[in-house]
Length: 610
Image (cartoon, rainbow, N blue to C red; front, side, top):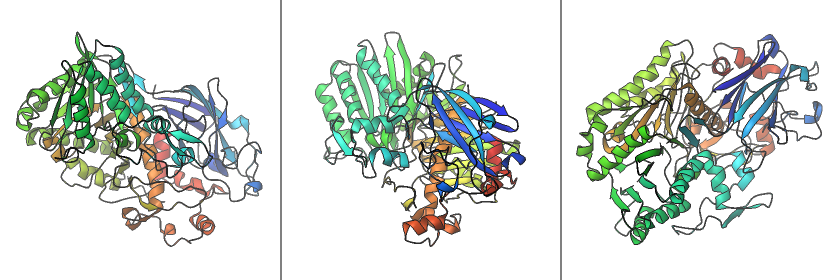
């Protein structure tokens, strides 16, 4: 179930199911946009208290407009959403750190201004309601999970504070995550586990559900590919399985993870592992040509491999709790056996690049024939130059095909695309110029940053690492990610909401060097529901960082020619800055104009999603 839709007259609401989140898209005709003040969104979780979604913005003088005194000025009943789509993630504002999952009813009401530019009372006769399940994504024997990955957000600051620690200041490897890690502005204390459950979101659940399944059933065996490895609770589980002789690990030993002094987290873990391992437990350190870059857990029973977890998420504090990442869990023998073969090939060849390149795993591709999961093709690297070209050129060809459609679309989140050595990087860096394709992209390392510019149809290419953001009121300041990564995803979605929708994802960086020198896996999933889930992830990141990039005061974000001119030279006073930047809601319908201008990206946005 990719979406549910409700209509009343020309007004429609479409709810798209994501991974424990919902994309709400609205549409109406041009006449319906006259004097439109925005949309009020009421959220009714099944058998839970009803609430209105909040808008960070409000009117300059709320008292000049109809207000519900029982709601804050930024509640969407008092401050309507002046956008034609909105992503709701439970637990961001309401319901605390552990929100309800189940059926939600969203009631959306268009709001209008009167003759004096004052917001009129809510008219229930205009409302449209849609019901949709807001749950972690599962389709057949495929389960998806995403990290929340939004330390640079209002929600994180409101829950945990701008200076919240992500790990203790000590270098202890296996620290106690139940210890208090901080206190927020409201005086509420929290532990590292509290943070980790919120930040790791459904990806963390997928990882720990699988590991706990293994530790609770002594008949199961675990094979593990790891690149970064320093999440303490995860390591403790793996060490316990090692004591029982039921795990093999291939762990990267590139310079990032190994030194002669043995001080790297991965070196320390290896020492702990060797102290406790019994029976068939074993560990292999290596790196192929450059990295052992897979992030994979394979579970086997007496009959063989039957479940596998893969994706972009490193088994580390940063990977699960800071980076934006994804995991996929296949509960099917067919897929698990393919990954098990890749593990055995890597193990038996002692991570030899030449041997793996010549194996049938690297020279061919695995295609699923099962009915319990969406159609999928998987390639394993390192590849030869010839096989690498086939893989990357195939991705480029599929991206290019969107240009032949009436409503072609490409949305992506790829860690770095400024290398210049990949044909995929080239097309992703340039696609914003192709106005025949709706394109939204984010990368920590794009060649240039292209933010939304009113009156143009060019796509967006934003950075997940804005430099020195200074947010005007009413926004709180947010932490940066330092030298680390925000966007660690490596996914591309083509053909949103189309029968031929496809997602490329996994651990592959889609780069020439990586495909030839890293141990990696790249998945091609042809399914409209899976594509919708990844699309919503892309939209949430790109909308968020399009805003943060506009507020960047240094680095690529501020030097880009596409940064809004009205942000340059804003006054130093916070109050004056807010007025100058215009961080208030419109008191007329001017905000709707781009959505009905066929030469504006927001017009294409409204048509594609609404």
